[in-house]
Length: 397
Ligand code: HEM
Image 1: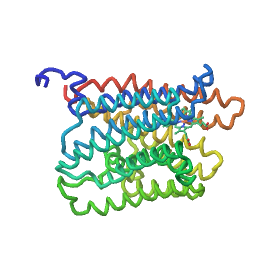
Image 2: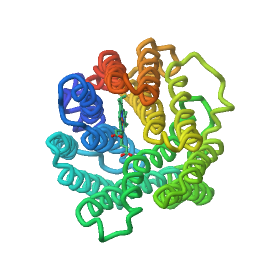
Image 3: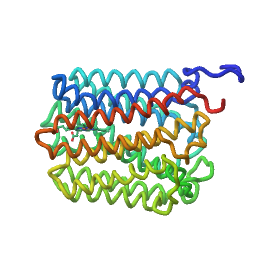
Image 4: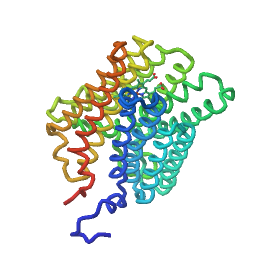
């Protein structure tokens, strides 16, 4: 333990139960690696990167942020012992190994690594949850459902790639959707219902007094969250069995209904804070992405990048910014205009527009993939220069 007047070292900060300080920088690095595979293919004759890109973006980039965020927040919410340095280092090392396996085209081994990573992470949390002194917010049933999607999705992906005849053929698409979308979408809804009202200065319907058993009013909110989560999961089944339009409309409706009831952003005042604005863009992009897929089903692989870039990515970096600022004694910046966040959000919008429009330009398609990737990596670069260094700062200086 450092002396009370001594500044804790970076490792001591992680050891104090704040894995985000290690996993957010790693996640940013993984994301840049995953998108730069496109310029490497277009300009440097690297192999076609579809599987490595998809694997690294979901399992390593988004996986790092999910583990970093939940590994920091859940032990606090449950009032249990925090994650230790060795656990955080173990998760980080496994993510690096998974990325290396994807890069060297050992995708099955990488998927197996991700399955073990998620099993270890869920076991770490469940083991702590047995000693909990408080119940988590009711929306967190969606976090559990998201973890189940990751485990089931990657298992189905392993089975369909190893013994394709062992399961019905729609399980191929089902596994991909559970992993690539359910793993993020459901936790975003669950954590969002708890966290987002704070961004907009709205009262939260997810705050309950500390108690070991669910307090009155907890179960109806949890049941509503579970019902909306089941809507999202049913939409993956519909998509896998070929009912594409119905699937995307149901997915968009489940997300909109949940957020309309739990985080009434439409009632929030329009402040000058950059984080609030980026969050609005990110929250709108997710249903807009699915609705545009329902309008143009033949362009689904293109349009899902609205969900991936201005949806999942922008939301991830906006929430990560708030976590980093909040844990480094800079919470006064939450509601301020921040040039770095505005520039980052602008570059993500540019990356999305370039990625999506590329598929309408037959001649320039490949070079546009490369430009989109550079814009995306540029946005992460801005975040890495202006926000990320604060992961080394303790909360109270
Ligand atoms: C901004 C730069 C990006 C570019 C240029 C890009 C490009 C592409 C392309 C061209 C494909 C389809 C390849 C094919 O059909 O053969 C693809 C698929 C995919 N991308 Fe991206 N992408 C970008 C960002 C992202 C981000 C930020 C994510 C996730 C957070 C992501 C996740 C995926 C996934 C999961 C797939 C596979 C989808 C499936 O198998 O159905 N991409 N990407």
